[in-house]
Image (tube, rainbow, N blue to C red):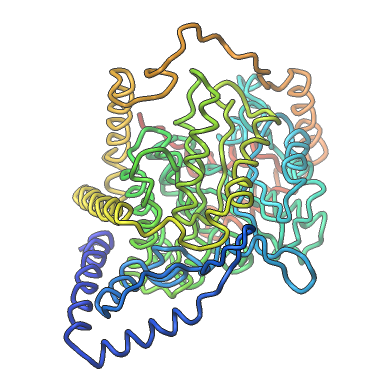
Length: 588
């Protein structure tokens, strides 16, 4: 039985264990007394909070059970926040401490809000970051890149001029990265950077490290905090933004994860991403099943490389979409449970490795051009669902995204939506579990878990994750689900308010500014890259030769990339690596 098959058995086995333990507690008075004693201790330790209107509430709401069997079920099925199997939350607090103060009078805690931006040249995105971050105690900057950067071809490649700085920021050199994050104290614990990029992720992270060294010195590396997507498998399954064949891509990824696990303990070197799987058309269950199975495949691969799960495991993170389907009431909760059981029972990882750390983004696919201001409401509901699932961080989409790169106005509304929910509203800041735990959430969670395990079985039948990838299983299922979704919208069986239900008769194109990068700026960016090439002409070939030698002789490519980016651009590096390992052939 493969690792995925063992995980299926472990999850089902855990549920059987819970039922057996409930029965045992009810029959064994000694065990029942132990459970009741623990319950009294838990209850006594629950803190108190007071609302602005003077109402006193517990910081954790506990059911009023007096049956030791039901208490055992409550503790084992969901766990307290921060306790195995982490259904309730990965950590014991999350949103609670936002309005509490430490001894200095400063608010403690960290906003879950990530500020997503990417447009034009590096300085344009830097300006947007400073605009969005001006009210944030913790600067959590999430970066979108343009097409030439995502595909690693660079701004000088033939035919890409029109794409420079469109839909994301153009980054070609370490100097661009310095411009991108200028003015932010990257060496401080309250600054975190996220990069939404996979194919050339090791190159971009190497540039980030080099740029940080330039500003803060060589000792800054262990202090750098953030995440890079780097998810090879979801690219094959959903996006095709991959540069090198799957084998070399996995090797480059493992080299980066190994380096970061040892040298950058605050950095998540891979964000295992379901968001793009969902955006490509997958159902919520497919998103969860493919994302989790990809995560387990990475763990298995890294372990075959001799890497210690208790070293790299805590530095894995996840990224899920949150749409309006009912599955999202419990989807992330179920994912935390399956991950915790699989890592503990199959891969024997410790408690830190068992915690699924989650970033959530509201659904871009749910944004609609027709009567587009309804998107404000859609995003708000999705934020509630994400926080009900105790996401660790969150990005909310802007309402005008069906038309343009988000404008400042609607990017501000998107960020404020989270602030209204978590600061102005009292729904989440007073208690960890104001909404979770209802019978409806339980029913949805049970159905979602059953469906995810069934999908695991289908993947197992294809030879595991990599076997299924080779047979195009995940991709074909995503395409089929996307077709069903579009058919439902077309025939009206899936209501989309303002589009196929309650639509206005005289809908007109909105009076919105379409944000585009002027040709003059694109030319400036190309000239910068050309000038970088001229200045480093004496060193670039030698640096590329050293990198190629490391690849050919089995060394850690990432360690060498950190040196290589000092003299070589993104396009130069990907071109040389392609000569050595070949190029990925997209699946259709």
